[in-house]
Image (cartoon, one colour):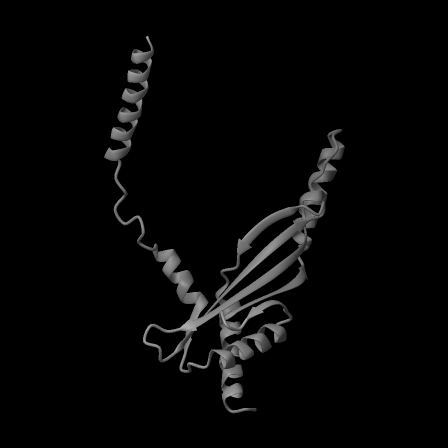
Length: 185
């Protein structure tokens, strides 16, 4: 009886391995999507200098000028993290929630739509610098994320900010700051 049980176990194991072995990786599995390439283009710029310390000093100045507080800086790694708190309330969202709560109250139930309204947010900026592939330039990549809390102090959403204007403003300011750093102004 024990031999039959062991044989059954081995048979099931080999059957599972055979089925798994027949599975293949989908074509283009590791190929980046068009959306990810566009996002990467939005977040990255190259500068004609190899002086990463100069670029990191300019980045630190720019994020502070934009109202961020430096949270972490690793010059040797080419990394800066910064954040800022901001109000996230929306008059339209609050008006809609108030209306829904009033309808619920008129219907005899207790509405709680106001509690789900956005209240506050923290916007985070992460910047990484590295030498370009040819070693003649420095690549800068910035990402902006936000964490939004509702009126009950619960995290409502965490998202990457993909607004091209924000990235353009950052890189315009950074280009000016790098120029001023290079000129020692």
